[in-house]
Image 1 (cartoon, protein in one colour):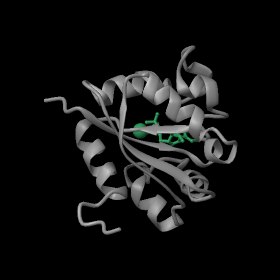
Image 2: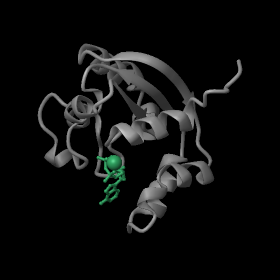
Image 3: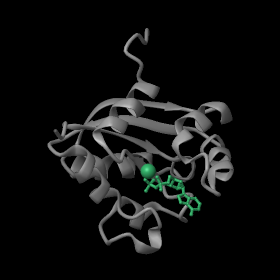
Image 4: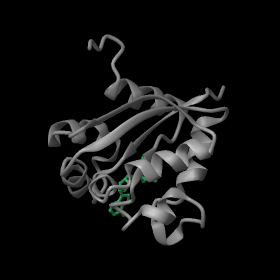
Length: 139
Ligand code: IDP
Ligand code: MG
């Protein structure tokens, strides 16, 4: 059954280029509520863990290097049909194929530096959200 949460990251290129506000605005305008938010820099080890599912793919090492190259913004988002609707809002992985009006069409620079992450399933949304926002986190 579809749940109402997904997980996103604003990737290092978009943070570096001062697009945190622009991207969060598109997310809110798209009907998503930001339920958790933080800016952090991943170590290569942590980036490698996050993208473990891609470890056999040829771009894995570059992806880990890129995702640990500067701060990212991680967020949990809420909306009906969140996972699928957020994938629609971000657009295709390769910005050359991303539709008008999508976040990647507006902000992505390349197939790697593509501005944002979006979970691909309810199960991964839960796992990825827990990665950044563990239940026992103290302030
Ligand atoms: P997604 O982010 O649209 O779900 P995935 O296939 O899950 O795309 O790939 C994860 C991330 O790996 C992409 O967002 C992108 O940053 C990077 N990536 C995917 N395919 C390539 C590629 O062919 N070359 C370089 N980087 C890639
Ligand atoms: Mg993916």
